[in-house]
Length: 372
Ligand SMILES: Cc1cc2nc3c(=O)[nH]c(=O)nc-3n(C[C@H](O)[C@H](O)[C@H](O)COP(=O)(O)OP(=O)(O)OC[C@H]3O[C@@H](n4cnc5c(N)ncnc54)[C@H](O)[C@@H]3O)c2cc1C
Image (cartoon, helix red, strand yellow):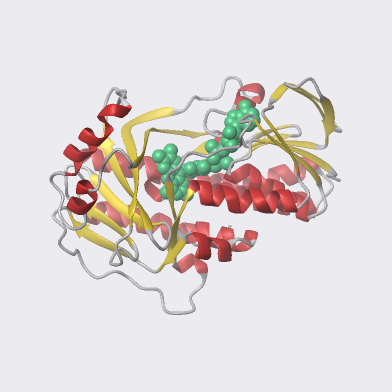
């Protein structure tokens, strides 16, 4: 029987696990090393599988209100010409048929408000100093000098997970993919009422509504050698990257300025081999399976992880059996997202045609639409 859980890392996965466990009556402590529990200001795309998981977590209405939920994707040629008609889900379709977007700080606010009101003890500015487990529990010393014993520890501390290093010191490290992702927050003109992706240009550009008046724009650039881009060069660099594109892109380009919220991340991935647990310590989210954003499903996977973990722990008093069942429901889905995303990046670098890129995405999306 699991009565007490320590969740290490208050990102999307950690907050979901904390919330799902607390709702089942488990005493949950959530710690985050960031004393201010901030999240950087960028948008994320929410795919159908992520919307379904947010619905199962009970926050879909918040996302509809404070983010943006839309219906269909509009493919474009790099010069802005329409590439076929967008596909629309019939009215009343389940969340899996829709898409959307939200600012990360907004999502953080939605989830952290729920976490606090569910009675989770939140402690900030601390992390795990040492772990010592036996068959019945885990003794944890935190960096603030306090100690406690828990039935289970959940490592949800992201791609550069310290918890992963603690329990699997020989695990593979994140791998750079030769691509970097630029994200810009921009005003949303009314015609950007669904996601758009521009194909056939020197790089991939897309945009996704994230609220009634904002959208975010992403650019996936081939950056061999992982160069450093000094912030003072960001606008000039982005302006040059956008120059060959038509459609809405020249308007976005003209709007770039000192006020622009720009975020750059080199893309890395990691897929931990099965199992993601050792005894009573389990890894979820990016700590176990960090993906590039090509399938826009990293957040959805992290939410699913938290929900499935709570679900399996509620089914049995045998922790080992619950964690094994968790793995059986999670490994192949995470592998599909990570491998498909990395492949998408490779195809973009190689200039593969749109039909091939789209067919790979559709096949994976259909598999992910199956129950998790
Ligand atoms: C450029 C880019 C674009 C992306 N776009 C999308 C997208 O459009 N859609 C999508 O679904 N996904 C997207 N993703 C992926 C998505 O952001 C991640 O999959 C998701 O955030 C993973 O959540 P997480 O909770 O596992 O980790 P994180 O969100 O990284 O959270 C980890 C938390 O742990 C805390 N922490 C770190 N170290 C410690 C420690 N030692 N002790 C305690 N706390 C610690 C951190 O402060 C943080 O709060 C994108 C990723 C990148 C890189």
